[in-house]
Length: 198
Image (tube, rainbow, N blue to C red; front, side, top):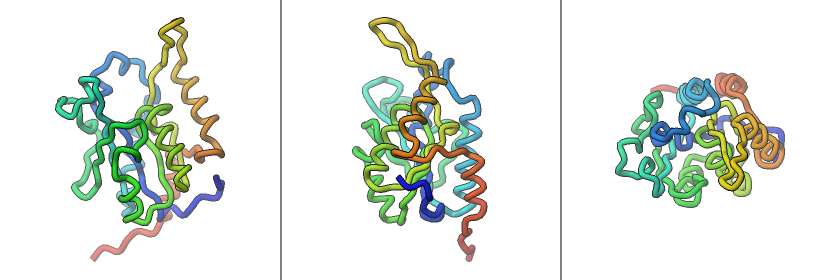
């Protein structure tokens, strides 16, 4: 992928699976990224201020906490989605295959995606890889993603969250995405053209 980004004015923010379902599991206590909520919220507010699209995605599967009928199946409280901001529901690891995300992006003229959410190496990374293959310019904001330690059932060997974050950056960088920071994107958004208010 090109290291010269497409203009931020042609971008959208994806907020992937930032839902209470994760809080209902024991692994929540071992989460990564202590400033995750702050980073995601700063990007959400900066995208709104710039008048650029944000799309929220929720994940459903057979786990009780991720059932559409579960009381946990909702955005985390620090996020307040506006009525004009799409909320998609997916049942795949990437945000494209089981939703109309690509159609929405085409309608909005989006060519660049900023990826945030849960989990870093699963739904966020999988969405990033597919987005790159579909031709989107992608910024992966590691500090605005979150994950949990992964253990191997056979041996009990465990990857720490730091190892997972580092590995994800290694495999995505220059192949599928730029590794971006919240500060860098907020500065870029501040320079973006703000739409006229009637």
